[in-house]
Image (cartoon, rainbow over all chains, first blue to last red):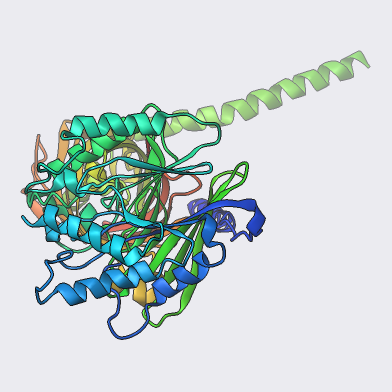
Length: 359
Length: 268
């Protein structure tokens, strides 16, 4: 009888603890426009826009960015054109590839800054034509921009890092596919670091450059951590993907070397956020000693959304939902993250918010 | 007056001696009875059940497959388990154990366990006391996903994990001069729901063998076991989990086991 009471008591204690945990959820904050210094939108893997109807995700992004375009940066986190980037003009796929990129460029409202990061699909789907394809895409973005501040970073098929400063924000762009590509990654026209050690050293320098209140966001197509398909989760093949040796997966040796190098560059001055796409879902994750938060925002195409598993490090996971993330860097102090997710029907909106840096 | 005080003092002394002496006398009498009438050794059935329940496999409550974590590193975790088994004859075994687990690259786990089980006094009479027990267990996450179950519960943060597990258990002194060695294989499934504190429920069907080591005298025999339980993951701390588990060994008179497990995984 006593044992029954003990177990009943413990069960109640577990239920109460759960209820307390639920109450700790952060409520969405309403910010006054004057409080926001810079707004950074993060959307990845958006290169599969619906060819028939207007895209709900891009429409929502445009509507939000249009509120104050002059202080807005929109970062497309790679895989801007599925499946194989921009082909040469005259090829059958050219027109559709152009349509896909155009949908994204047109989603950037007048006055806002647009940054396109390269992804593995932009590198001709990891093909031998990759370096050429990435340069074609850069040129096409420049021509579509029509003089607006929209460009591919890093450019010219270089690995980066390239820093963009806007107030307190330092946005550092990396081309992570450059690390993983199995074919030519430089030629006579490349005027950039030629070794991974040089890239790591440059990244370390850019991250550690101190300025009071600086908010450092490092972006690349491949995430540093993920509970999605590329993390070896979702589906029966998950744990066995490590034996496949696919460099696109977290479990592969080449990918691990890249992540270790990037994180090593962070060690002196951990950035606030490292963000990537690649996995087609939305994840907010606790970082480690080298980076405080890791974001995965690869749900820019409704047609490609996928599963994601909640990890011990996960703060928020949205799988099989399209969407994007928004970082508001406040004047003085405070960085607010908001995650917007949408269903196939178009319904959706704000799903999660969290102060990454306290106000 | 003085006489009255003396009488009271004598009465009080007699009362104290009497209250202290009665249990002592009873205990002496009980010991005398125990010595004079040795309990009959456990029947073959009781012996087989005791051997099966003497190692961590049968003595400790089931726990779910590990919660997935980042592939970037491996994690060490601590585990505390308490199991209480009661059979239809009102006999019961209690066990307390601690374990150390290594979760490799956020997925599968290998762990060691050391603990102590209190012997069943009803079955063993004068031999009751306790014995140590040790075990090693590996759990492999084979399938980790979420959508199918998530749609059923309208919870898109749900995770379903299907895996395999095996364990070895050893207890050196279950009965005087008799050790127990057990082996089990299982195919557990875990479903976790919720965004903040995760509610996990799990089922751990398996098969177990008594390997008949050191003087066990029983042939290797297969029994089926089924575990069930639920718990809370990431309870306040991201690495702290609490589980309530129930286990049934499908063997006549084996009874049921209920227990609690607390696990803590250290995150970087």
